[in-house]
View 1: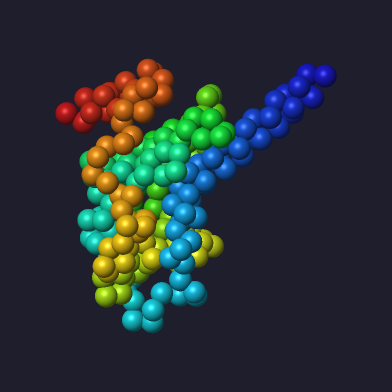
View 2: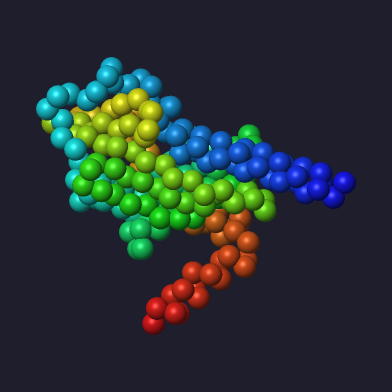
Length: 191
């Protein structure tokens, strides 16, 4: 009986982790799904170039990315990534890092928290540019779409990158007190 209970408990934990993975994937992939009006057939134009790490850093640094039911924040300090989602599946928040490469990738590696569950996730987007138009695709199997037109349009996904910090206030409310103290300890240890 005890083995069944522990196996059942592990199965429930796996199901909860899978549900949290879906919440995290929808939160980060939501912008891509919303941009279907600018989907590119096939690949970006043949003359497009892979965006450099410096270009991507300038695009994302110290910006919040507004999502349908939340937001993610890419802070320049320590390349810290934080996020929150308040959707149909409940509230969750994330903490991790973001990185950019000269291969045109911006990746987010974060632990998503929901209740007592934690799910690590990595999401990457690849970027190309042509004549001022930025193309983006979620890896590995997303569709290319226009992230920002050369002549910026109101419906460009890039317009959802804003300088305002849309995340820290929610994290202050949602993050357990024991985790809030953790960064302060790290900062003191560096001195």
